[in-house]
Amino acid sequence: MALWQKLWLLFAVIWVVVAGLQAASILAFSEGELERGKALLPITLGIAVPAIAYLLPWLWVRWRKNKNK
Image (cartoon, rainbow, N blue to C red; front, side, top):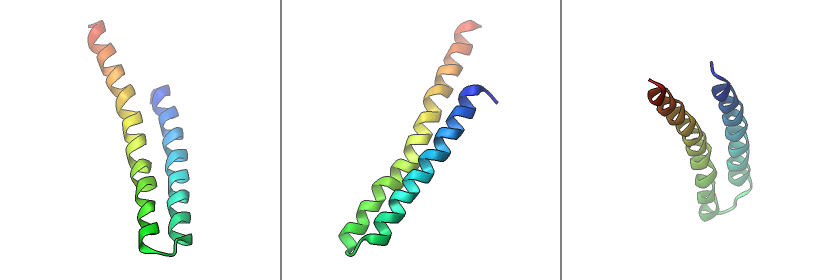
């Protein structure tokens, strides 16, 4: 496993845990249905940001390999 993958894994775990805690606290302390809808943003970002953070270095490494051939 490459160094960037190990660092991404560390980042992704921390990011998902923090986003999950934020969404859980919104759901736990919200009183109305409208306030519970605010939990969708941390849930979405908890999934999207690590995926994008993996995709960008993966594309970079792939581009660099093709450039060196």
